[in-house]
Image 1: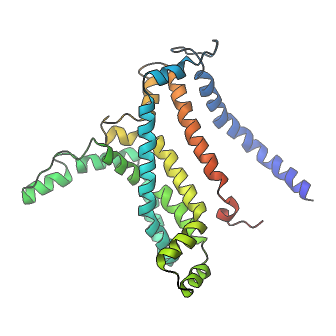
Image 2 (image 1 turned 120 degrees about the horizontal axis):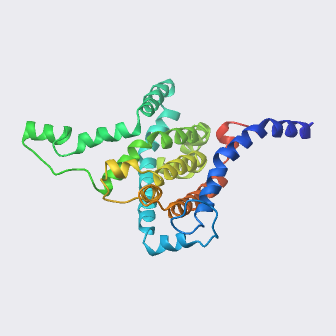
Image 3 (image 1 turned 90 degrees about the vertical axis):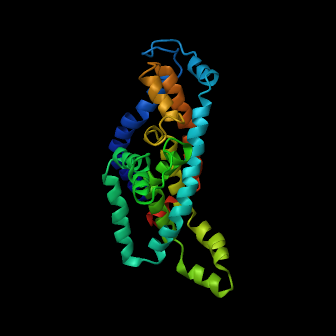
Length: 284
């Protein structure tokens, strides 16, 4: 009986598996193949020489990679600190009112990321909404708040709030209230309850939210272009430039593969520590 169910499940999932393999895995394999080609070629009919990876190291592209990973880590940490109180309130305090917050956050996703970030450009620029009103009302002025690393991180935090908030709320919802109440009855402080009960038991939501935010932030490009003004060149920008302006597909592919390998390794390690059955509410 169990074998028949597994066979039926395998046959049911086979068409979608084939579609995913063709649409997702095949392009990755093509990019991986191009990354081993000689520089400035546009087909795979060459002997692999891995010169693109050597060029990557010689021209210092690792700086862009470090900037991308560093800002992604900073944005993920800030998102966790910001979203934890709201996620806890949505899961344990607000009750039915949490659906209002959920709708409000989701509605922001209906607006293009470029439009939302350009709104912040108009808000933070010299002569923009904030500086213009301060100068008109109080005679106070300040230099342009754009085009620096902190404002890029702010853009990442602003854009990816939903991807941290909802997994955190789901993870916190899995923490039994009885465990928290029992700890409080035994004299545990709020900090001890947070450290020894809330954080460990909500770890699946923390891992999923952190991975989503880190992966998306590491590959982000719009924030650095609109808010950063090319102050910092991120790895995604280098990939785009290599494929378009430089017309160096092997270099762009090698840059993409390095980012994919780093982020993919972190994702596999993180997912290996997550109980997906618990997140989905399934019982074994």
